[in-house]
Each structure stands twice: as C-alpha cells, then as structure tokens.
Length: 463
Ligand code: FES
Ligand SMILES: [Fe+2]
Image (tube, rainbow, N blue to C red; front, side):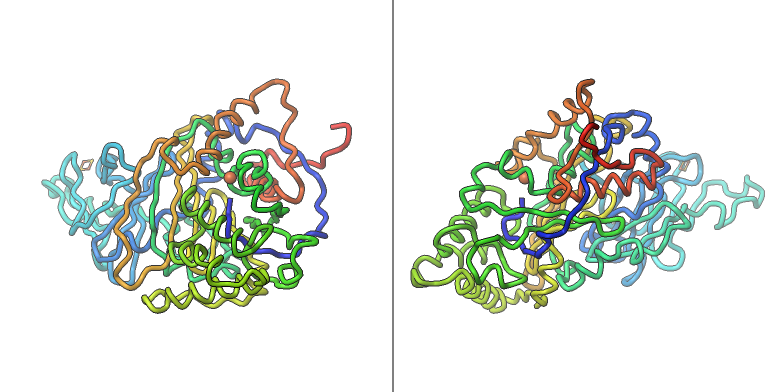
C-alpha cells in the first residue's frame, strides 16, 4: 500500500480478462523446476553496493542450492564467485546461524575443511593461493583449475545483480524499460532506514503478489478508505510490470489536471494530508520520510482553509524539499510527466519490487524456502536519502511476521490463507482484476515463458 502515490491516466486502457492456474504456487514439481528454468536464468537482485563499500568487503546471496559470494575486489570492481571451495566442495563462507546471509571484510577466504586459501583482491581475486602439499598433485593443479567459479555480476540503481547463466543477456537489457523509467529517481543514492526478513507459510509468488496491486486495500486495509477511494492499475512492461493509480474522476480539478503529484485524500487537503502522513508514518513506516511527515503535520496551521489541493501539495513538497536541502539531502528533480508514467512501484521479474519516489523507496524481495512450495523468505527494506556520511548502519534483521508494523501485518494475514485456499479442490483458478491486478497476470505470463507452463488464458463466461 503506497500512500504517497502518483497518477497516470490509464483509466481508458482496456485489458482482456484472463485466468491462470495454481500449479505455479502449490506444485512441488514446479518449485523444483524453478531452480534450473528460472533462478539459474534470471538476473537476481543480490544486495546493495553500500554493503560492500571497501576492497575486501563481501556478502553472500543464496538462491536454493546456489550460494554466491559477492566481493569488492578493487575500488571500482565487484566480482561474484560460486561460494564453494574448489577442492572437495565445502561451502566456502558459512551463513552465521540465524542470519539472512554472511558479510564481512577479509584479505582471503580460507576453507574450513583443508584450508585451501583464495585471494580476494585485485586481478588475483578468486585464485587459490595456498594449497597444502600442492606438489603431491604432481603439477596437475593450476590457477585455472583451482580458482573459484565465477558468475555474471553488474550493478544498477545501487543494487548488485547476479546471474548464474553464463549466456545471460546484459543486465541493462534485462531490466528495460524499468531501468530507464526509474533512473531519474536516483535510487543509487538511497540508503536503508530499516530492513527486515521473515519466513511465510506461502509460495514466494503469493507473498510478492500481495504487494503488486491496490485492489486489496478496501478488503485488507479498510481504514485507508477514510482517505478516499482510488482506482489502481497494473501493466505489463516486458518482463516486468508497474502499478499506480488513476487520476480521480470528479476529484479536485487541480488533481485531475496535474499529471505527476501526490495522493491527497478526500476533504480538506490540509487535514487529510496530515492525517494520511501520520497514519503512514506511525502505522507502516514506509513510503514517506520524517521531513514529509513533520511538514504535513503543520499544514492545517500554516495554510488557510481556502487552500486548494494543488496549493497544499506545492507548499508541502517545496517546504520539505527545502528543509531537506538545508540539511544536505537533495531530492532529484523528476519531470512530472515522467513521474506520472512511472506509477508507484515496479515489479522486477521475477522476485523484486521497487516502490520508488524522489526521496524514499520501499522494496520487497521474496525467495523460495528450499523446494517447499508452501514456504518462502520474504524481505522488506525501506530506503531514503541521508546527508553524506549520516546514513544509519543497518543490517538484515530477522523479525517474526507479527513484529512488523500493523499495516504490513494486515497484508501478511492473507499469505498462508491464500496458499491454503488455492489447494482446495473446489478452487477453479485465479481470475485477477484485468486492470487493477495486471501485475499479477504479467508475472504469470512471464513465468510461463521461462517455465514452459502456466500461461494465463482468456477468461470465458463459462470457464
Ligand atoms: S574442501 Fe575446501 S580445502 Fe578441502
Ligand atoms: Fe497492502
């Protein structure tokens, strides 16, 4: 639920109704096939650049059977290695118990089994530089046949992306058109305010899909309806998709005519903006910043009752922008036409969602939990802009689902129930709202291309 949202006029776009089955969510065979057909083929978001700021810093990223060791080998170079010792296959870097992944800084990686040692920096990164009794191989061991396996790695938006497929297309090509649409928001300058991970009793797709449509707001977050009703849209964009809101019909004239702007709610815009910001800041701690929240609370006092929605937004944003600039936080300037077109969030195929704005972003990420189709890892991270050197030090922290902010708990309450419900022999398949839940259908269209099964089909009145 993105409370600060942008509109694009897609109200007239007609999308045919489609239906897709439940195999992708509940089939153990499908979950097993995902390893080779999906996870070993796609570019995957594996971390943030700020997590490995110095030479020798590393993080790991695990996806089913594969573990990737991402290392800054030089000030301007990152490499992704297979996290496995080339001697007899011991995982090289262990994940500390209870942690999401391993991280740290080192001069070399020493295998815990027979102490083979691998270089971390410079041109020799990945080379096995120490092997006990190496002469006993009679010269058969070389740098080539002992060096760590390597994967494709690239960066975009401040994120590190890896690909296990040596023949994968370039990252930029894979990410388009999302990359071009999101570049103006300068996501690479944002740093995490908080980041938590948890485990759900549902398939990873169920978890992600709970956040890629706004159709659920009335049913899952009914208290948001006090701020007005907004119709959402979700559109396929190649491999990816994005979602947003229609400009409200019959709403304030200024809102309807302005292409890129923030959602204000019904009634006195000073009061509704203050209330929505308070609700969002305290209830979910996403999609806004302390500056935006605090300036919003002053609106009823500093602006006259006659202030129009456009005036309220203008004052609120300009004041917040100036307060942030004075403390060294500079929001990028994004053309309002572009802002409107970009929507509120992008679903990067297959398992990353980026809710973007000029001064904050909300990211969701889901991964399978072994080959159990009924379980997944789920991660939530909120980012914002900080003055140089003042970003808080955060790390991925495990949290029980009921420890998250209450609006997210509302979303979480559907996860296991959806997973269970779809197994019911009486369920006939998913029939997403063609417009509002277009991102759900987009995911299954693209999944079908990789998996060779499960493509959505037209929904007929009799089906
Ligand atoms: S498995 Fe790593 S040194 Fe033997
Ligand atoms: Fe929600």
